[in-house]
Amino acid sequence: MKLRFQNHVVGAGWVFVNRKSTIVNDAYADSRFHKEVDEMTDFKTRNLVCTPLLDANDNCLGTLQSCCQWCKLDRLLKLLQDI
Image 1 (cartoon, rainbow, N blue to C red):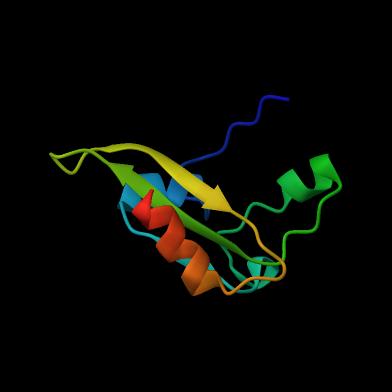
Image 2 (cartoon, rainbow, N blue to C red):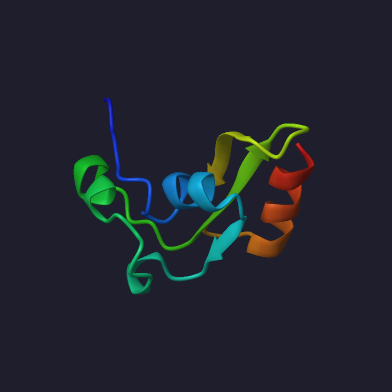
């Protein structure tokens, strides 16, 4: 399945453009969240974390994003940032 989104939506696109990590505790309450992905995949996103992958010149090469229903999001974000 190939999915494309505008770069202002929460998660990978927003983090890529802004080069800032984000924690979203309630995805459906965040106006940047793209709920159409859930509709296509039959998955209900409750929360997510996303962090940019930056090179030595602060260029964003990509992002890491994860949804976790049972873990502490701040710890998950720290783990992703340490990768």
